[in-house]
Length: 491
Image 1 (cartoon, rainbow, N blue to C red):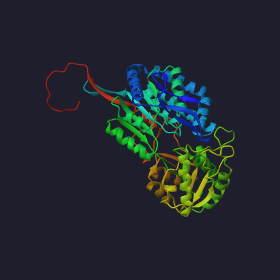
Image 2: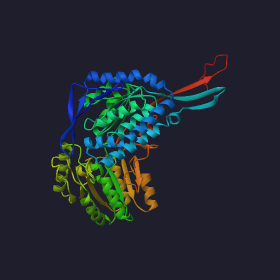
Image 3: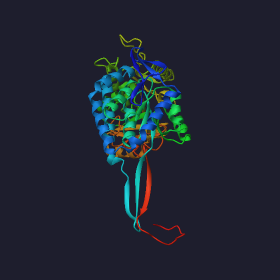
Image 4: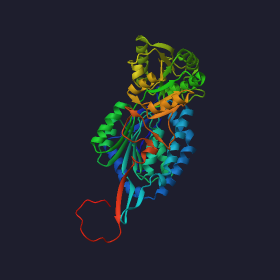
């Protein structure tokens, strides 16, 4: 089996304690990962702190050159990285390769740091007085990332952080940590100085130590909303800059004029792809008007035809969920919902896969007539489960979204421009799609939700330049001015 070590000061560092990394399709260990103790975390932070000054003093163009080389190395090694993700996470090889491609978009954005991290100058803001702003890196930044995008989420954070001149400590999910260390190796090969990027593995105690350390300046987190809120509070109490992204229950509104074949295709992929383990997966379809039954009929055939299996098997479309615990929790929610009156239009939740009988599979499932108080509707299941609700008007559909706890993403399928415009204006979500099921913006924009889906006022990608830098405002006058003025006058 592979041994996944920490990565500190440009080298692999083993630990005294380790746990298994399990392939969710087989329930078999494929690697062991070292778990950090207090001393290891302190060493990683100290390494980042030591490397920070020299990296911050490195010209921006040279930082960008390192990122350009890292970008190419990620593309050159995409198949290897995708195979590692698929083995540890369970997603299909195609989906894992797509994750690497989207991660590269974040690096491409960060390569523009010399322009995007620029300050500003105002000449003659007063009599022979100039005022300017300059952006400084923060120091050692921390990224705590989830299992569902083990490469992309970390690279969304660290690409801008490094481009802006910070050092970075990455704490990936211990469920699929291998790719983070391989990425760190590739960054070193690209010319990143030792200590600028460090990777440590562990559980909640490691995260808490990274947050509490007096030598870390900023914390980025992606995970469940309850944990996001706890991290936001803890980091803020520690005086840290913090952005914490939580869960989701993304709604798709289907208007009466929507093309039902197109909608069914998009909804099937958005609800069941990656076994529903995407923070932008569509888990609720809200059908306006009389189209619910025709849409359900089209969805039924598509859901029943989805190929379930190991993500490393050719032709498989949906792999397992990440853990036995997740599988059992979701299956119980489905059983409880049906017992409470929900209609199981398609129920593949207990399906097994030949040759992979011990895998953590939850097959595509569609529930209709679900009560709005049911956990199937209120909670983020993170599984290939689609809830279909019916309403009479767009107003009712928008009200469902407004009153839901989460506000990560939402979409509408319609051919009516007026309905689309009203949806854009009124929907209570941070990422919005019109005839786009999963509206994750390109890297030049931001990834950020509303309500319990995000804590903090900055997003990832292009919105994070202000998070990973702090401004300094300089007012200067280069002339001798005599006399005393005890008033508080304008410049």
